[in-house]
Length: 417
Image (cartoon, rainbow, N blue to C red; front, top):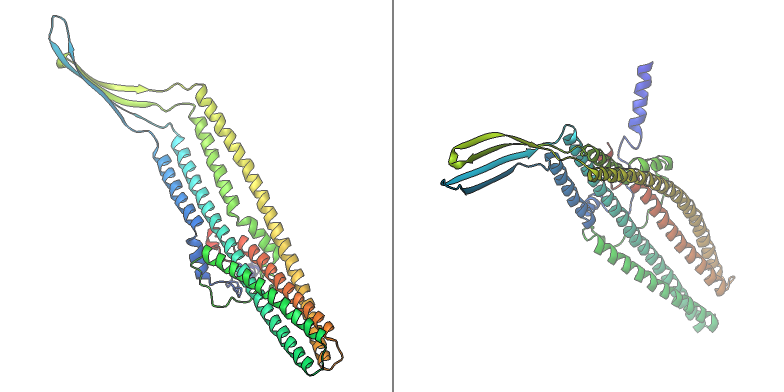
């Protein structure tokens, strides 16, 4: 029975979206391979990668240690009264050695520094992904509004033309023609604004991510829906997979090791070496061991206190980062839920407004509805459609931000295996 229950549990885990088949990709987003290449080559990510190299070099230097062999010597000729001149020399080779435990602390300090730099690089990639999502949704949202305004202008232009022909046949008043023309002019101005916003969004996207291939026509914003993992799961993953928290933790570890190293360094490292000399032209010669050790004083104590205070500050920074990430997770979930609910309401309103406009148009053709009422209904339908597009884009923006922050899209999950 226990074995059957265990197998059932494994089956449930493997069937979950986080461990089974890859989650279905959202339509309307750039190809994953293009996103990966764009993020890897983002200047901020490349700079953070170089800082990882810096941290690795620093870690190597810490593991190796700063103590090096020191060779000191002198050569001279000494004159003695009523005697001859003598050639003399003196040579000393010394090297300091780290006391037990210090080398291990140096290695752990370097490793924590590398971990912090790697997490900062991952967070830079994360921020680049958020920037790409922002610019991409600005672009496809502007394209959807432009296409909507183009359809609206085409409808109102046809309506204005039909009204003008009816006026020529004395079936419509001149006021109706003016109203129809004014509505078409307003739609033309609205389209010009949408086209300007589209051009701006496309220019920003191309300049910021030049390697992302843009199709000739932007895809329409996909209809948003609740993530397959669920809001609660994604909110939890935002915290668990946060590179900001991991970087702050690694930095706190690094400064903690540094503080322990500073305390250990209050007992200075000794130097041991060999000394050889020759005096009075070689009549006196000697070889021996030499040793020295600095006597620590107040300076080393204050350095240890400084390192301890920095370590305590880093722990407080870690707590602050955790709170910030927890707040981001809660805000991401709340915003995604509210945006999704808001879009669903506006979608229903747009459908209803379109149905009203269609009935008003049919009534106008039969002569039962005035042109003024038809134009008002068309305007309401157009406004409702534009609001639905904006709400759909913002809902997608909130959902994709939640998915990026939880690392279920665009961010490699291998970092959290």
